[in-house]
Image (cartoon, rainbow, N blue to C red; front, top):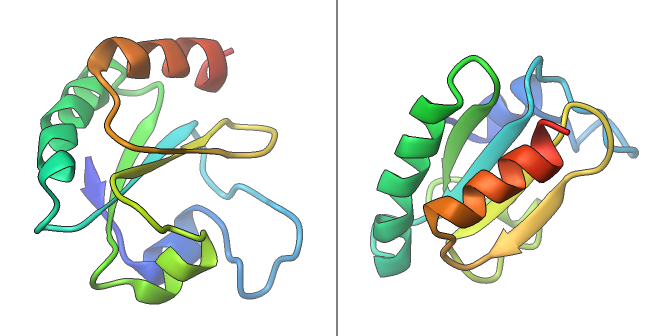
Length: 116
């Protein structure tokens, strides 16, 4: 798992400042965890995402974005509640989920959406 900021997002994921249409820049499908240090459910989500990151190493990437330190990025994606997970397939449009997901739910998303 890698923590990224707004600039990292624009170079590794998608430059929403210059692009109108979604254009994923990554080489593997990804999960982006929008979180805050003070958020209880975010603290529960983090170790689950760590497990997913290890389980699917080399197949997907898992990134974390601190919403407190990256308000522009959070605003650009309409983050209103956290944790919020952005699922990015290699091709196609991303999908957003707000709220805590268990490992079995994340496994299903990874297999049915990201690795399909």
